[in-house]
Length: 347
Image 1 (cartoon, rainbow, N blue to C red):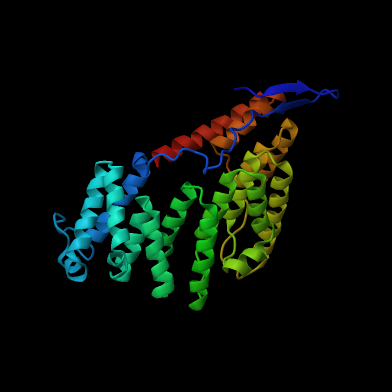
Image 2: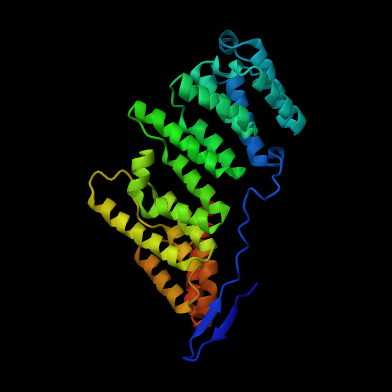
C-alpha cells in the first residue's frame, strides 16, 4: 500500500506511513504446535542425535547409540529419546506429550546423567515444547547440583518461553540463573537478557514497553540486577519495539542513550564490545519519521557513519526521495544497492 500524502500550508509534503499491524499479545494468539515449525524440528533432530550418539567419533556408524553412551545412561532413557525422535519425524504431538509424561513420572532419568547429557536434554526438551520437563531439569541443575549450564541450553528454554508469551517466567529464571552464576563469579549471557527484552516488546502493551525501556535507559540497573552489560542487540530490540508502536519519543530517548553509551565505550580502553549504532538502529528511526526531509537527513547521517543501507532502508527511503523529486539520487542509491547484492550472491 502507498502511504497517503498531504501538502502542508508551507508547501512541504508530509506523509503518513501505513499503520503497522497491531502487536497482539502472544498470550492471546492461538499457539500453533511446534511440530508445524520446521525450524524447531530441524534444530531438535541434531540435538537428539548428539545425545543418542554422544561420544561417538565422526565417521562412525550411527545406526545404534554409541557404546560410551550406553555405559553412562540407562537403556530406558535411550528408548525414550528414540521415541521422541520418531515422534518429531512423524510430527506426532500426542506421542511427544506421552514422552513428556514419562519424564514427569520419572524425572530422575533427566538429572542422573552426566552434565554434557543434561545440557543437551535441556535444549531438546525446550525445542520439543516440553517446558515443564525442561523446567524441572534446569531447576535441579541450579538448586540441587549448583551448576550453571551452558548459555546455549538455557537460552533455548528461555526462547521457548518467549514463544509462549511467558515473559514473567523468563524474568524469574533470569533471577535464578544470576544467583547461581554469582556464586562462581560468573554472569549470565547477554542473549538471555535480550530474550527477555524481546518478550517485553512482543507483548506490545504500554506497560511492557515501559518496562523494556527502563532497562535500556538505566543500563546500570541491568548490570546491578543481572550482572550483564547490554549490547547493541539490546538497544536495537527495544528501538524496534518502540518503533512498531509508533512511539517517536521513546525511539529518540533510546537513540540518545545509545549514542551516549557509544561515546563512553569508545573512550574506554576496556570496552569489550562496540555500541556503535548499526543499520538496524537507523532503520528504527526511519520507521517513526514521517517527514520526508527528516528521513533524508537520517540517511545522510548513516552515510557519514559509513554504513550501507539494507533492503528495509531502501523501502523507507523510496517515497521521500520521490516526493522531493530526487529520482536521480534514488536511482544511484538503488544501482549501488543492487551491485552490492549481486556481489554478495557471487561470494
